[in-house]
Amino acid sequence: MLKREEIEYIKQKYPKGTPIHLYSMAGETTVPPGSRGIVDHVDDIGQIHMKWENGSCLALNVEEDRFDIITEQDKISEKKEQEFIDKVNEILGKTDFLLLNMSCNSENTSYAAEKLLAMHQAFEEVYGEGYVEEKYGMVTMPAVVRGRESGIQALALVTLDLESSGEHWGTTFLSPGGPLVQGHAELTEEQKRAIKEYYIPYDYWYTPLVERDHHVNFTDMPESVADIRRLVDEYLVAGQSQTMEGPK
Image (cartoon, rainbow, N blue to C red):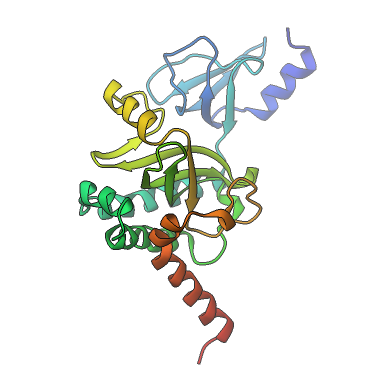
């Protein structure tokens, strides 16, 4: 049971109207992870009564549930994320996924390299050139993945927590049948088997520049992956050269 001073602190921290992002609610499925809502009030035992976007009024328990206040920076980050995803969807709408995966796993990687470059350029249009700022928190970015056991390669979108040294949170594989989001609740059994058979476990190499990432070894990249990345790497080198030379 919460102490009186703890309850007062909760009331001060979560006043009426505070926007909340839910990560998990213990023992409840009515309000799924990822839901948003606003605080209605905090009662005298410290429960945070909510108005959730799905219409639910289930209260939060600070001792059991995981949630955060949505900050202005969070809103900016989410807007950036959606802008990038919209651009990627435009690219994927013109993508032959079967050809893409053949290109990723053959000597002729041109098609895969071109698509990866297009996604990287879309990323830079949204987040800018150079190192991605840590303030954006969770960021989805283009990458190449390779199954450790299968050796199968694919383009992907990986989500990293830049505020936690690039900790990996999820992957969307651009499979021969289209995008497959790892761990998504709506995956069919066949899709789950495909991810497990072709990709799990896997290594990944993203294209944007990220500081303080201790999880990815770019110095030990397979030649086949480097070949898919070649257009992006040439693009990055050219950009760095222009920056060093300055305006003419």
